[in-house]
Amino acid sequence: MQVLSFISGVPRSLTNRRTVEQLWELCEPRMPSVALRSTALELAILAGHLMLYPAGLTDERPARAQAPDPADPAPRAANTPTAPGAPKTAGAAGAAGAAKAPTARRSREDGTPEPRPVLMLHGFVDNRSVFVLLRRSLARHGWRDLQCLNYSPLTCDIHAAAELLGRHVEEVCARTGRDGVDLVGHSLGGLIARYYAQCLGGDLRVRNVVTLGTPHTGTSVVPLASAHPIVRQMRPDSPLIAELSRPAPGCRTRFISFWSELDQWMVPLETAQLHHPDLWTENVRVSGIGHLALPVHPAVAARIREALTAPGGGARTGSSVRTVTGEPVRVA
Image (cartoon, rainbow, N blue to C red; front, top):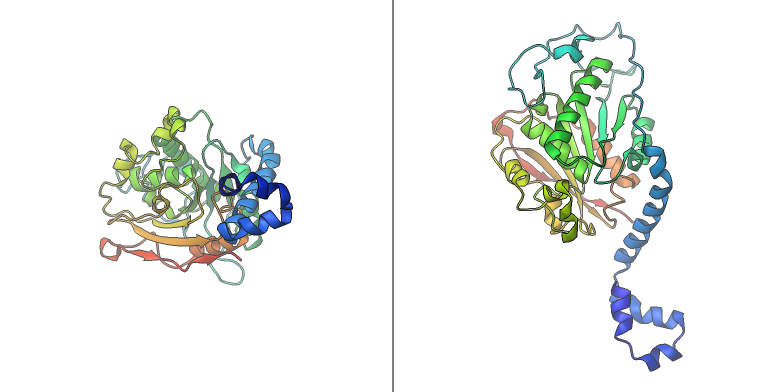
């Protein structure tokens, strides 16, 4: 758009006698090189993603449950709700959790803690194929329990999607024998993950929620898209955004929000940052890439791994609520 607007202001006589290379030299000072590289990267990622998209349409088959580890500590009772949205009180883990009692965090052979299971949620009209590279990065660095969830493109309600996520979380905990998970969500997927952890009692299961380009306070991009109900829920004046801004005392989940100043889907840009007086949040600025690159770029993947293995989270008290600004991720 910047190129076209600039060229339209150049006299026809000038464009007729200039070569393409000379005209580019005129355009270049008006167009930041970082924005150019980011746009080119976004287009390349989009092309690659369109090729992978059909493979991600089918639901992922969960891995077969691991045999119990004799070295695991004794099982402990799960302080989890029996259904999404249930009160945060101690009780039975439910039918899903009864198949395998939750255990404390397991350790690897070298004695370091084994990472928790990670569930990844895609964005609007997308599917699990968007996480191919991030999943590969996590698996290469020791994560064994990884699952990418597909929710139907016909989904019209974030609350319903968050309830479905809650059922998946319980299934993963029952299958793996773990007492909790971490969530990673891109765009709309991050909003679903946050709603589950903040509003449906999911903080009893979820230690970390990582969001990538998520409109925490709503986005006003593409007004015509409001014809879709779930897009209307992502608008700044929607009842769902208002619900997320309400007090959330005692929420134990840690939220790490990655945002980029070149994310054209976040309007305004600040909406991808999470600021809430009752939540433990960290906002990480990513420089040099746009919306589609956030779940793909290796520099972001490295910071996600750091966030998921950082101490803290899941056991804080109200006095430790804090919002911090993480070290920026700079992409060359």
